[in-house]
Length: 169
Image (cartoon, rainbow, N blue to C red; front, top):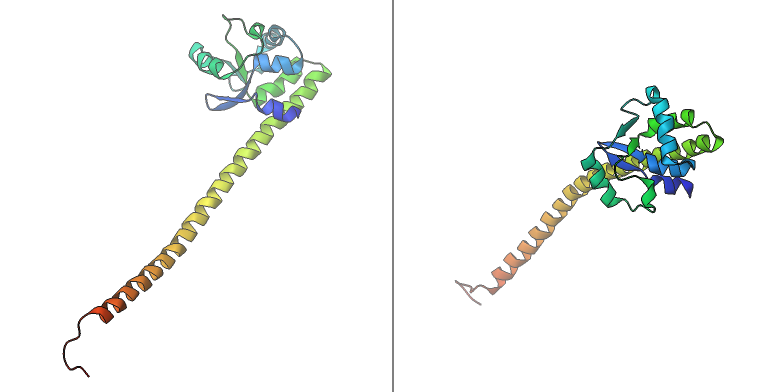
């Protein structure tokens, strides 16, 4: 149940799967400002491929998609931070509680499950394309044979209906 809940909080921004600081704060059971303060005190372990701040336009697009349960989650003036899978893992080093470690494990598992789903979806899509091309070729031959037989029957019917010329018994 916890895993599915975490997967619904994963968004794609800038081509990366991310979690927002306010969602992570909720999962870690800390205030968003506390989480962000801990990150800022340890900013050296959060390079741009681990964490980045959304632009106003990105946040505008995202906030229309997110139903926020509390207006206090994000002050209007502050843009949220987005954490990649690696950034979430680093949060366990910054937030040193047992809850933080367990939550990080659950979140990383959610990212893994998402990757596995995407991978299996891609594999399934490729298999369907292969089957489609294989069977379309086989069905093409069957359709041609059926059309030939239908045309042959029409030719035989036409031969019987035409007026005979020449010697009649």
